[in-house]
Image (cartoon, rainbow, N blue to C red):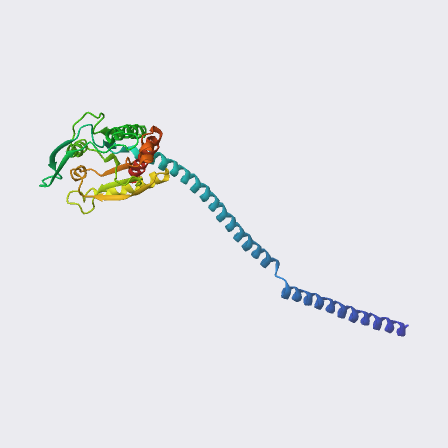
Length: 308
């Protein structure tokens, strides 16, 4: 009996020892696995933290994109509004100034009867020139220059008035006697903002053709102050006329023209073409040709005032 009890006690002790060793080994494996996970994976807290950081960057990106989109839409709307306002302002500004309409003086060159008496070439000048001549004549059409220039000038007047400008003319008929100095002072007294002088050219060489533009000389004794704006306007006119398909030979500075020397107003003299050239003479006699050229000049005038 004692022997059996002793045997049971031994077996019980062996079992307890075996159970303790088994539990110790199991905990050690988990510790190893946990360490392995820590070495190869981030903790749930770190993972969450990084996801929040990543999401935060993504949100920032979305917010920025949203802001950019909103800003882009806002800028687009603002630009559209600004462009619309600018276009409206520009269209109004083409013919309007702060104290009223811009005034354009059109001077149709020459007249039916010339006046060969003399007048000073400029204020206080001792040098004199003919007061006004009757101009040239079409080699093919026999149209006098003074008739052509008045016809074209009336067309130009209509275009400019349609654009909202106030237009005055030095003459509206052929049977007048107005000197070149008087034409210039007429524009001065009426506070004109620009003078457009319409002429046609002539040459002993019948092959010469094309329009040209003449402006007050930059270094002229009487014209230096009005040169800059005159030149600016002429440059715009030349571009507009060429764009409409007309040949424009050049812009020429003149210090010898009484009409420029007496002028206190920026001025451009347009030589429409050569009446001594049969083909060009016949073209200039056509109303459609005059309309096309005068329209290009009116559009140039409008652009000129939009820049000033």
